[in-house]
Length: 202
Image (cartoon, rainbow, N blue to C red; front, side):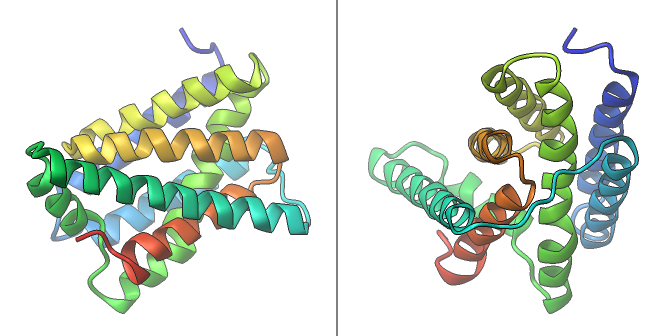
């Protein structure tokens, strides 16, 4: 068992349930249910955990933007590797983009105002932070990332699970090293700007 923390366990089950409902109704109600899910998860994390929000120093901005760029370049390299190796994952990549790419201006509002901050508030600011109280920084990052990735199994997308694992570990380390939730939020936001708006991979 990862922890005997009741609020932690209920929170994780709450997250999996909300994600399952959101992706079950894809695509018809996804952009209604998914933002609502992250809103409720944010509320849950704020209710049961004091959030660590601090003034952003220049080093924090550098870490946030550099990590977002590095993660994007890592994903771009992965796409290039899939393409030249002939691994039959290009169709999955296109399906993944169709799954997560906003198609309306309101979707972008939900993504950048509710979804991305909500993921960081809950998964890093609640799940990983609670774990860090019971184990080492790196173990908390690994366990929290595993839970974050496993919650995405309900999407049915292997690439989305892998993306959650790589991104989740990076954002967990950023949060625990800086103890400032704004750092992974900005990193996540910048990564999605690159991935979905400026330089999409499909």
